[in-house]
Length: 218
Image 1: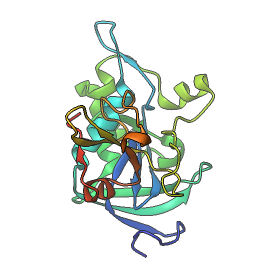
Image 2: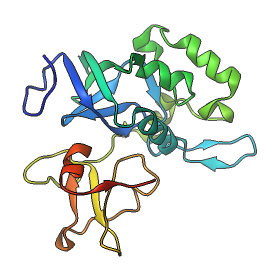
Image 3: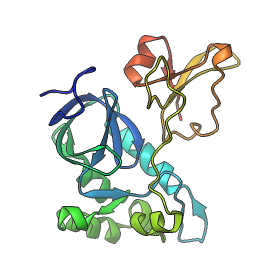
Image 4: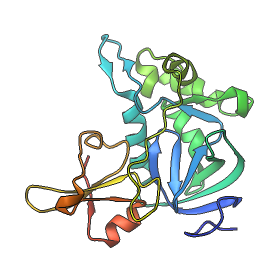
């Protein structure tokens, strides 16, 4: 079954434009999809550069994935579901494996517990080239989660029209420009939504564009 709005969450395939929720989680047609085999640094996670400076590697990972995917179609074949109810899937963009891209570019580690080492060669390649998080020091995402005692998943804002899980922020600027922000963008966390001023939450980028909003530059 091909994923379209309104179909069952028990589908085995989801195809469409994706919103990036965090470094290894996408959303297609309202369905949260966890990328199989790769464990990206978490949204709130920081890393340390070679000159001992802290940087927001979790947000950078999400932004890098969002930039790479862009407006291209994503195809996800569901393998399982995790304990948070998300579909776990192998996803591809333009024939390229998303999990492999994340690991090869240094934004995720091989999630050996599940991948059985499928992406280990890409992890070694990224480490040798000092890409992404390998440019300095970092905690493995699974170790970072243990210290925080929770899996970091982008929080769902108040539902819009009875639809939970709408995480895209539709902001109206001081110049009356309608701009939307997706999780992982630089200004996402600092953007506040005031429903009384006509601002709103969206469940997908397509919905935001259709309503007359444009995507924030960062």
